Image (cartoon, rainbow, N blue to C red; front, side, top):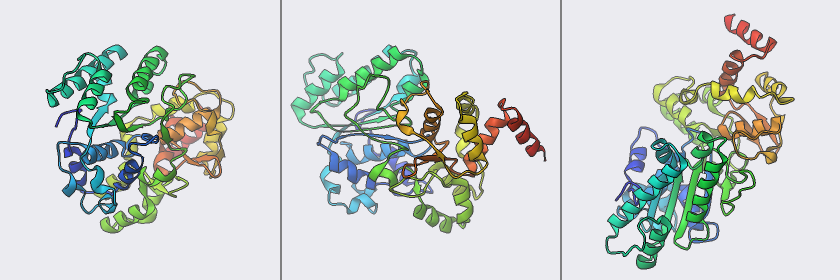
Length: 390
């Protein structure tokens, strides 16, 4: 087992060994269904602290060669599926956390160089019998290995979009990164499945549509994968019974991410923390300050301020067009683009059947109050400050 090639099952074992683990192994059933097909490219985007990395670790534990995960998955949903044994620990898994490579380098060139060198080193170490033509060429090495051992790859790319969040305006670096991913992934017979996670969808970065082969599942469309985004209401009820917590209060604090094919979806991080500590408070926002939200709601688009105020005042839904959003964090043409970004970041819920956005719950409402109280919204800011004094 390596760090990037076949990383094993230890991380997922730690998840299942935690005080609270909610079974989401049914996601593997869908992945098995599309493996080695034209639908083998999956992009799963959801807000921070919504279990993206847990799902990625689960897939690595299931597919990775070099470990035996049968006992680890016994008793969970996937173990009852007829495809369970067919794909279990049968693939060369490449697990790439892009945030790790980005954090260790200071340019896109150096990031991609580090990634290629580390992965090639592990390929050569694991398969010393393979004659790699060029040990500086990652794609070539992957092709050489596959042609000799005939074991396809499962690629798991976690935090794929961190480049677009940290290199927001550097279109040259973004294009270089997209070209690398396209060359690595597109039309490659050595790939059996690619599962990519992030916060932002991937479809429309300007006119550069390098990754148009992916099926995208996001907070505006999750389809049949909706139940694997957060905690479903049934799962939260069971946790409330186990930990003797009030369900209605839990719903008020953490519900609201409605997905059409799953109904109410709860923030996993917040629910787990509330159950463990026996207290309702603001857990999700501990991972990011309210300034991140304020930067977007301070954008002076006509109607944006009124829409935010309406939702703070309890309006159930504000109409929005999510289809014009370009899926980046700097290109905004209207209030709809800002509202759509806030959906993907987890600051708004979205009902596709009504095409409306809303503030999901009490925890997120507090973020808006904090942001506006520290902004320059004139009489609204003064009213909130006076309300807090009272």
